[in-house]
Each structure stands twice: as structure tokens, then as C-alpha cells.
Length: 329
Image (spheres, rainbow, N blue to C red):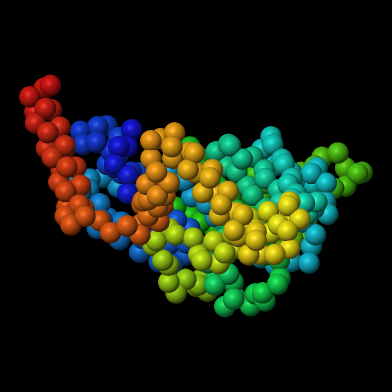
């Protein structure tokens, strides 16, 4: 459907073939880049990028937005029963890892979905620690748990609300947040003497979260955002350490040099067999894997003129589609 794809840590841009009824481009903006530049600056920059591939007609259409509030609280997030959630959604799930509670999801898969989860645990898993640079200026102390309340709004819901463009959405953030935290979902204090759940008192924590002001002037932007998609060296070192200690524990080895030698030997033996089945040497297979990662991380040096050639290919297809349409093909 979108044969041309450009991606880095800021954007994933999918370009449609010229002449198709699809939009010219479908773009996903990373949360980190939005936190760095802000949505309006991103929209302006993106328009400039897309103009290099053709003329822009009509207005942008927002297909999905996520609104999230990060917070610290002494409240234990699994201290209530699922019946305390009063919602229009039909599915409520709770999650834990290694016997530690990590969060709730409500209504995921529908036109609105909610997540309440431990953001620190998510960062440990993903390695995306840029959010911490937003918390520090707001008074966060490293070591404190941070929870995120996040709502996902899909195009179907935005259309119902008459929200099409980015400007429409930004002008109605308070209204969207108020709707999902008061009408669509609420955390309550159950009252066993009252069978009407909508009359149950609102949990104090929820009252605070529902009062978030999306027009506040106190927003903080990230100082910088790397556009490369490569993992940090710390994350790679952590993965290697985990593999080595697991191997040492598995084989009862207490000498790290012995473990490293055995691991590299087994790695070479295994992937030599994999390479052989592909009629490659180990070094050729290794070079192939490096090339794939270089492309994934945007660290490979493009051949001279490659970008211009890609743009020209796209423009040639657009002109060809126009000629065919003119002839009635």
C-alpha cells in the first residue's frame, strides 16, 4: 500500500505511489521527537520534507494521538479491585512481572484505550530513558517510581468528535482529557451499599489526574533528540553481561575469560553452520548482518546521489501516473 518507506528515530514516513487514492504520505512521529520539538514545529518541519516529494494539497488528517500524564504517588496502584474502574469499555486487564505489579489496561483495541503503568519498569525493558530528562526539571528524584496514565485515541473517535487536523486536536486537548477521565473512565471507591456504580465517589488520585491542564505554559521540551535509531552502548553492554552471566551460571563457570572463550567458540560454530546453509562463509554472513544493522540504525553511509535518485524515482512515477490518467488508461 505504501511502497516507499523512510525511517529514523524522528519519523517513519510511508509514501504512496503517485496517482493512488491514498494520501500522499502516512507519517508516524516518535514520542521522543515530539517531546523535543513540540507538535506544531514537527508539523512545519514535516511539511517542508514532504514538499520535496511533491505538492501538498488539502489539510493534514490526524489518525491517532496519545495523551499521557506522568506522575509520582504514594498510592499503591493495585490496591483496588478491578470493579473500582467504572468505564464504557468492556475489557480490563492487570499485569505483573516477577510477582511485581506493573499496570492496568482498559479498552485496548477499541477506538479509545487506556494504560496505567509503571514507566520506570517500561524504561528498564525498552532502554528508552529520554523521558527522565523531562522529569528532572519538574522535581523528580532518581529512584522514585513514575507511573504513566495514557489514553490512545484512534481516528474513528476523533472523527466522531469532529477533530481532523492537528490544529483541531491541539485546540481540544482539555476536552478530550476531560471526556476520558470523567465520562469514559473513572477510578472510584466502591460502595457495597450502593448498586449504582456511577454514584460511587471518585478516588482521590483520579480526581487529581482528571484535573490535568493541557493548556499549561509550564511544559518542558527535551534539549536534544538523536535521530539515529541505534541502541546505547550501555544497553548493549547490559545484554552482553546478561548473556555471559547466564552462561556461567548454566555451566558452573567462575572464570570470565573461560566463559568468554567458550561463548565466542560456540557462537562461531553455530553461525558457521547457519552461513554454510546459505552458501556463505562466517565472515560473509557476519558482514551481511552488520549491513542489516547499519541500515536499521541509519549508520551506513549512503552512496553519493542515492537520496536524489530515490526522489527522482518517486517523481518519475508521479509523472507517469499523471500521463496515464490524462490518456484515460
